Length: 298
Image (cartoon, rainbow, N blue to C red; front, top):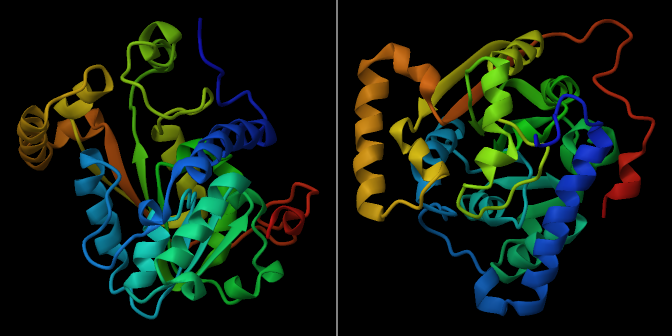
């Protein structure tokens, strides 16, 4: 039995699936966490887990310096990264499809002392209309997202992202990659394979990015670059590795990816950098759903 094909599911259904997953998570968080659980202190980047350390550090380094910048976080979730960026001196707008998880983000920002530097808007990127939100007027100095592009309608989202960047600004995303023929991808996303993964939060229509997705990005940006991360560390998809084994494999992967160019296309994750937006066709707006995102914002 195959999971839902992300190429055949409608974008609104995709967002609804994602929102349902994270609304349920938010309900549990809001019912069980105390104030200390929300707080993000200034200091080191608050990584969700060890898998994020290398690639999220790379993504953040690409948009430094952070102080004084207006930054859009796409898929802000519970606000962990947005709050940390605000501690670093950035003015942050975070968007997400889950109304509930943004309640978590707002509480986190307030309790962390940066509520005035963070604004959270309930809207998918495909519907984000900056003219409706004063915080977004004039565009952003940087856009960042972690494990979110593979949930987007690629073409609509890339067009919207291109319209949101200030001149010279870049968008940076950390994303799962899988460069294999379509029949292999179908097997990879079948329940026969995914049911063997360690438990993690995902929605049934998500799928790793490939050459086709990079091609969509290139239609909207003149600069598209990707840096690979994690190779043998793909084993983490199937077994829960000890910290010692994880560190060994990630160290091996760094050496392989740096010294063997062909290994790049076997990577598990990549940091994708987008810049130099192409002009939209005359008379054609970046995207339109016939749906007012203001209805979904707070």
